[in-house]
Image (tube, rainbow, N blue to C red; front, top):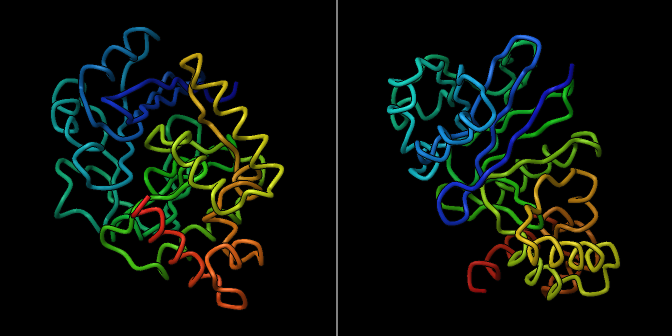
Length: 255
């Protein structure tokens, strides 16, 4: 049996995700920003929390971590690089480390940029990527602690995953990201089609996530920084992809 995903809203725009292995009953929450919505989602599905997968240390991703662990005894898996900033860690992971939620295996990918210790979790078996605030649908995280070079490498690593990998991210930002993307990649027909889809989904209150790696490679300007079109759009024709990426990220910061 394959993994079951349940997605829900946490706070104003955070996306909560539960991962359930029906073979063993193991259930993980991806990050733990608020206790109440996570408990409500678990109750709705009739699942018991066994694991908490943490992507990074920001409070909207770990504020409920200690309370959930105390209530459920769930195992906390979090980045080794952030041991000093994330409480109650049971398993500290670094690049290449493999962890299992029941029978579902994930490899840890270090993806610094948004924060210095950020990690993402990829399962080739389940075709899933939990990217936290590194890669969003049609966007990427702000560079609070990392450099453009670090973030470009992180995004490039995620873009190298199989196209049919489902992307789950930490926030429902797709509609605003879409408006920014169209400003810099207006002739991209795949992006235009995605924009229409996103507007329709949000109009009826539906999630725009998951996306896929293939769709993001075709539409996300931050993954397309190596293309001539995006270089031209920021006035950096012939420049390195990382310079184009940095210009796009700075433009998004000011949008």
